[in-house]
Image (tube, rainbow, N blue to C red; front, side, top):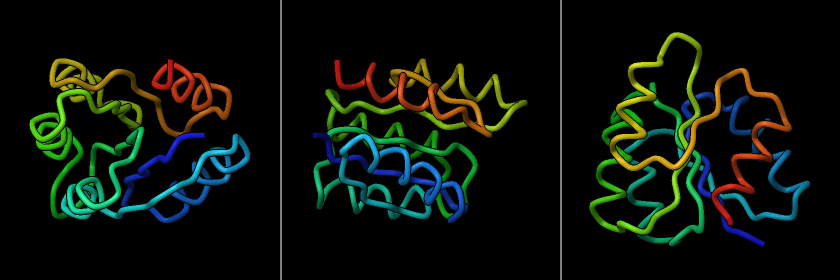
Length: 118
């Protein structure tokens, strides 16, 4: 299955997403912010990235732009809280393939992963 980089500053969100992903058979690598995500992306070369938007150090939009610059074929989905629609639109324009609203429905997360892998 896929190697998934899961980036969120909230440990409980990473744990919740990781549980779904491992149940699907994927391996999960975690990062707490955009800066860690870039280092981890370069080192681990994940198949998919799930990227929160609002984080300390470097936000998800900035991290997305750097990831796409380094690897234009990268597969990234944003994970966003309600009320961040303008940021989601910017993320899509910057190369995100999908977005999942938090708090997420397990089926929606599975659909996003399936879409990224197809």
